[in-house]
Length: 421
Image (cartoon, rainbow, N blue to C red):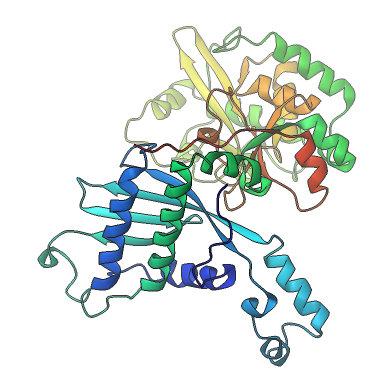
């Protein structure tokens, strides 16, 4: 059985402090720490790499310790962080709810061995630069940091993991005991709605059942690559008109007071690559602008502004058959707007293709798989955590409320096994 009681004189609050100090002071380390880092990487040669750059991963554990290891009650009272012993205990258990805390260790050797990197709990804490000092900053030597205590703990914990790998208990212990908040899984949207009915109510409040049925029917027949039909021409004016249809469907501000072009500049990103200077009624002028190779860096197609993954885009597309539109906006918070935008165009017989159309349809009906990612991982662009699962467009961390209900409804993936060389 994996020994979970080895703390090497350090408990979770102290270890977190050491990690915090190291991640915020990435620079050269002193000779003693360097020796320990090389010893660590030498020890890790016994563990099989699991990716490029000699990537190795291990789960390390440390005990929570007592409340006295968390902090001094009198100091918390003095600084006004708590008002009672009960508050102090609740704060301790909030930060350290489990008797054992888990940390993912990742080590990398890259750039032909010139750099050795240690990542702990998602934080890069140490990087060894093996280039000659003449190639580095002159101040590095005198600013060298001493991380002996932290690296010594990691070294001891790694030795313990290797012992348990040899005893063939490491992988079993990890799969049985790793907290769910550290794991990867997937849950159906309808299961989330069952646990939190208000999520469904809030998500669908701005779309009618008839609109959902109409959308599902249209998307079911959407071709794989581009829509059926083409427009014979495209002008800046017609593009603004198409945007207006989407704005109107979503009751955007200014519908009754502004021209289509004014609406576009009210709601679009604004970095238009010079679109505003293109005559609105000239197909030739629009084509010249569209094909201008010097035009780059703008966001003329971001017609409903938002963040990197939360805006809505409407692209004008040209091929040998004519013009068509491509619509994109699959983030959960904008997907209803996107659906209504799509329906407005489709009901006016405008050839439009919706990216991620079937995935959005699944989202509307709760049939979509939502990826659950570990704490500390921002739930966006997490495809790499779900290989072979098809396309997921929604991710989340395990919620703090109704946690057990979510755990039971989630399909959890087994942890990747670690092997000795």
